[in-house]
Amino acid sequence: MKIFVYNLREYDEKAYFDEFCHTYGCTYAATAAAPTLENASLATGYDAINILTTKMDEPLLARFDALGVRFVATRTIGYDHIDVAAAHRMGMRVMRISYSPSSVANYTIMLMLMACRNIVQILERARLQDFSLRGKIGRELSQCTVGVIGTGAIGATVIRHLSGFGCRLLAYDPAPDAAEGLAKRVPLEGLLAESDIITLHVPALESTYHMIDDAAIGHMKDGVILVNTARGTLVDTAALIRGLNSGKIGFAALDVLEHERELMYRNRMNQVIGNHDLAVLNSYPNVIVSPHTAFYTQEAVSNMVENSIRGLMAFEAGQENPFEV
Image (tube, rainbow, N blue to C red; front, side):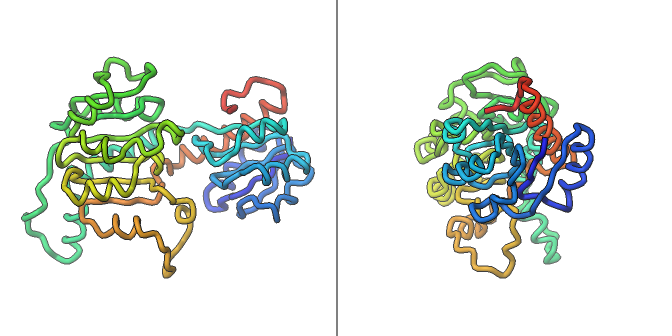
């Protein structure tokens, strides 16, 4: 198996590619660049390409297909950036990966605690040597009702970890999950209405696009904390801003945003970004925007690289690939 890796991060991923390609008996070459029509020829003679969140539309997939690439692996859980139907029409097989759900679950709970305790105000004012208490009072997470929307691997892990805080836990998901019994399963409208904190853990699908819109926000408690470490498209940003302006949303802790593709994982210092929504959200004292880093732990990066290689080797051997889409 010969793998061409795009979007390689030398500073964290390369050591894992070296290790796991040796372990699984495959070879790889790589570039830090994202795959494009112009650099697709780098993958000439390779069986597979291994990518991150670059948009893989039909023309780009067709270019790789013409070069003889048979397999596409994305080192991400989400795969909405790949035109899977087009790949299948060409006979290409596609896979995603899984990684430690604790990475995102830990980060989610950290954001909840930061929101509950007004940590933005505390830290920013402390830097200015304002050590007074006025305006810094928080609330105890253990006294909150937390609603978890989506109880797959990450959502279920959030529930298990939060159960140690003593929170009242509500969950919405049509499917049963590994945290069954720790949270009360309720309809979505009931969860929105009863929760002090709402956290999102569902994939980006047509059915989940803007699931948090004006109507959903209207069902929420006044002053609700909204946490999103899943996908930016789950939240209608304009509706979120209206909710913040009205006070319906008391705090928003966001690791993902709509239209983030040209921002995340890039150093845009001293550049005009032109993202109006980001500028508005960053102006609020009750908003945290972090740069899609909830996943980013040593364990998760190792899992992402290893599972992408494991899956590709399963394709090559004609074995079942648990990560195929």
